[in-house]
Length: 251
Image 1 (cartoon, rainbow, N blue to C red):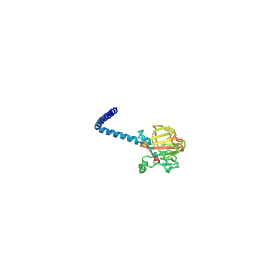
Image 2 (image 1 turned 180 degrees about the vertical axis):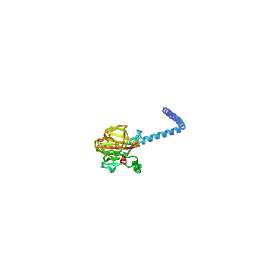
Image 3 (image 1 turned 90 degrees about the horizontal axis):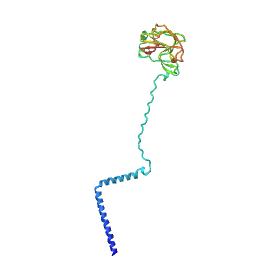
Image 4 (image 1 turned 45 degrees about the vertical axis):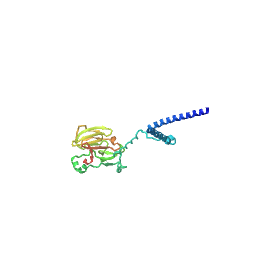
């Protein structure tokens, strides 16, 4: 009798458990039915995370971490190359290599077309008796050890030799410097100025009126600009403030 009662109780408990389980399953079914899209998204998210964790080399520990571009200072801009050196003091013409002479500057079209007319318009007496040591144009400069433009004529002379005015006019400048020693400039009044340099004494004053052939001073050793050359007169001719070759004007 007792055994039968125990079996009845046990069957009753199982039945109660099944009843409650059925109720819970019904509630779960209703819950899932209302949230189908949410669960689908959640399932996809979990699956994606699982895929990344199980396949990325970083999480597997089987490779280097991925590299990402890191922003930093821009590459330095290359400095422009220096400009091509200008022709002049540092450029030696091929025909002047190894020479200590001169290379006259090319005449302008105006000078080539009417040299005779220019000489009739304006002429110069020779201020000293001596040959041309360095002509007007591109020439070797011993003081600097290179070739550069020589803006006048160097006429050979001797220390103490008299320097005479090549043309009449008014003395517009008298000055002394270590570069040119005494220098005298005479304004002819016709758009020309005549400059005499490398003098060691002066016989005229600024503002004085001189005639062609008058003594301006005496020659001395050249200044720093033309050091290394023999004693000479540096003669320049300016026309409208621009140096021109004095040679065609000399008588």
